[in-house]
Image (cartoon, rainbow, N blue to C red):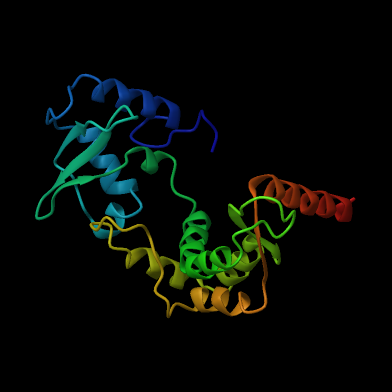
Length: 214
């Protein structure tokens, strides 16, 4: 979307970010405040709140080590909950969330392979640090699984996400995208590698792919 196009309440995306930051910086950590602009934005544009018709009534910043702050909203019947106004302006990439959930679903396979191969399988000289999807690459496996899903199934997966819990977005083991990924891992070639070998293997595959496109 062009920076000059109005995005919300008469603001472009960049001007909306600046307006919200200017408003928020007026308040100290733990100081509660109200903001019609932020409340409307979250109610209308947040990926979860907009689906569930949830409106935060008050806000506050909470201290977090290593960051400026965490942003919280007060929701009637739910209380205080961390909520991102920035995700309303720069929405999540659903494919990235789905791929992350699918990667979590095969973590036990990856961990088992690494445990069975404590030494780098490529150079055989140093301890293994990562598990490389040699063939096919994980992105290929995950993309294939996601393509199986209809728009309704994707929408259902996010609608069923328990945003109130502290758990990350997940897919149940019975989900057909998860089943597809698990099935492909029965024949996928994995390799426990050290970091340098992992980097080198990824570069080799990338160079081959670029050569095939030329």
